[in-house]
Length: 406
Ligand code: SAJ
Image 1: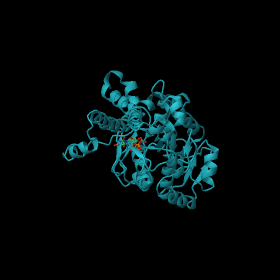
Image 2: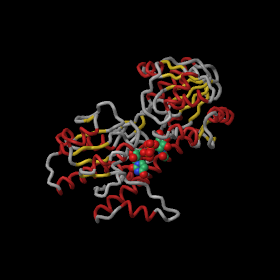
Image 3: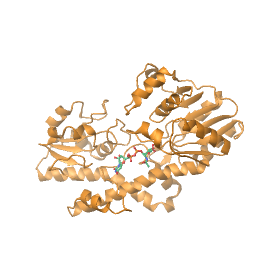
Image 4: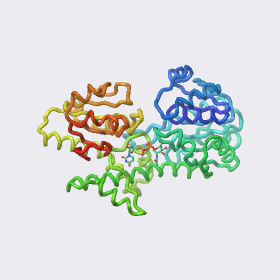
């Protein structure tokens, strides 16, 4: 039996995949409402293919509970929040989960940490916690870091098809854990040490952040001379060794906008590029605000309530709003502006901000400028409803003739 701790974006799909592979799975979360909802057969977030997998797992007798189970294998997929003021990882949930496991586990148990952690966290926070309780690592408890690599919107496909990294102190344990993941992962499973697993995960997201920052900087350069950044990068990308990413209104999600800070925090003298990239990406919501002001000025629109932000999620076709560029933009607007501007997202069903509309047509009818912050399929399928509006398309997703770009 395997006990999955944390039933959020990562833990739940992983639990379902393991159940599908034939394992006896118990999912544990401290949030009793979430556990009750899952036990009643109701998912708490949208994800392509998740519902089918969930129903299959329910019929395979997956269990959901708030209790930790006595067993020999655990996967920890608990939140690893980031403290904005210090730019550091807050390991409190991982530490609490490890302690809860130690309270009930069998001798020789394996604790697999999937949550993203800053490099060195296992040595710094987890090993001392275990040793201080009198457990011997390598005998009583085995530690593994198997960082998750899936992206919302494509999770099920990526669980099966992305390569996996297993970091452990002991080869035999790596091989045992590798067999577990091979139950659903069809791609390469790379065995390494814990420190390398921690570092490789963080640099993957940092690599993407830096590359997005390059695209965003190009967008700003092109804007000053009224050049089309999309046309220019499309041409440059024809070169066999060039692959420039897409500029956008900012970098959202809990991973790419957070993980680079771990490196900046630990290596402040060596991370000029990484820090600059972070600053560029963080500056994009303000750049969007500047573009909104340009359009208002050009069309003599003085009332901010005529502006509507389309999209609250952090990226297309998901309902996840963590660190979303729209929320970042609202935070950067002064109170008066943020209060006036209208907001809509077809995927976000809970009310998160002032003047959030739940109906697209009502939203569109009230505004003159549509700012496309997220390229959901929904907007691409409803272009006829915005074709008579002024459109600022920050994601270059609306194939309308006349749109304003970043
Ligand atoms: N974005 C751009 N331009 C681009 C690509 C993305 O502005 O060309 C923006 C998106 O709109 C979004 C943000 O970047 O706001 C992040 O989106 P994403 O799709 O690049 O990544 P995430 O956050 O959904 O997932 C990332 C993935 N990491 C990498 O691609 C290296 C995923 O594989 C990780 O599992 C995930 O972080 C994680 O949990 O760490």
